[in-house]
Image (cartoon, rainbow, N blue to C red; front, side, top):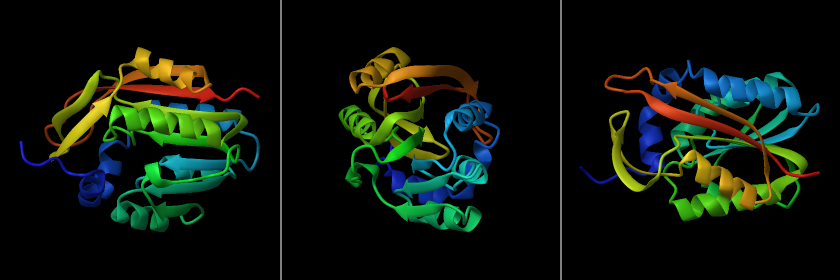
Length: 209
């Protein structure tokens, strides 16, 4: 195993290949559809790990919402700005972001914490809970697994992965003061050479009003 690549290195190299590989992830689109059904008009939505802007930001702005996406990979920010000009995309590490409490109607994080150590994921969940308005929603997706620094190969790139199994992840969302309102699980095979099936979990959690 060579040196694990950073998230910026991996996703700068992948670019639109990532979007192509996950374009048929019906679980993500279902989670977004449920979010769209629940959001009030013209909601402010923060997308953490925005990638190419598709499908998350694209679907949200098409529905009239105000979307700001952050990604740690410069290439992804460039692609997203070109593909979804109606949203805002900024380069930034989610761990370094700072917002006032109660300023977002919703936050989405689709598979964007898998390279963050588990302690940092817990911290981020707590910070996101603070950023949400009362009644606001977090949509969190990950590969549910009890791994704390596992060296794997992702789409041809060596990475170090961190995650929680579904049960402990739900416990951490609840510990942050959030109520889980939707839970979906799926198995997905990315459209990429050598890719195998991977479990996905999609959790939607609400901050009490």
